[in-house]
Amino acid sequence: MNNGQGQGQNQGQQQSKIKNPKTQIPETPQMTDRDYINDMLATEKYMTTSYSTALNEVSHEALYMDLEQVFVESQRCQRDLFNLMFEKGWYSFEAAQPQTLQQSYQRFTGYENQIPYSNGQNNQTQ
Image 1 (cartoon, one colour):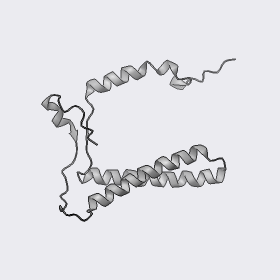
Image 2 (cartoon, rainbow, N blue to C red):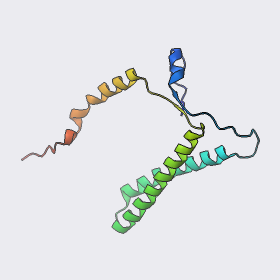
Image 3 (cartoon, rainbow, N blue to C red):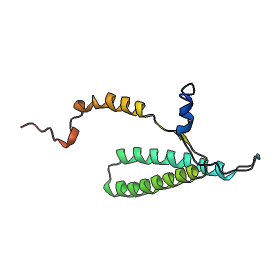
Image 4 (cartoon, rainbow, N blue to C red):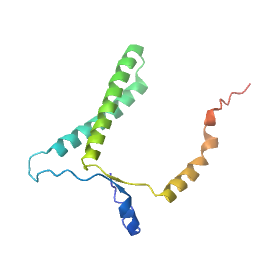
């Protein structure tokens, strides 16, 4: 979603907004399709986060497998709702600028040597 950052940047930034044409909805006090889908999307995001936490903490293997299946289904539902909102123009975000991507890449490349198993190496000592 648009978080309001970069509003003072050059006008070319306007063209980097990633969105589809907005599907018009009536302006009424009643909930619209957009409201319902947005609510379902927020719920699925919450659910996938909760299932992820449960998966990290469950010790019983059969329960883990059941939760994992529900997590995958919930994650798929979340993605489908996101895609629907994006398709209808109800969800948009700013495209990352190449310079920003390069800066992030350079910053995090420096962390690579701090990761014990980077680049597929096992790092076992004998």
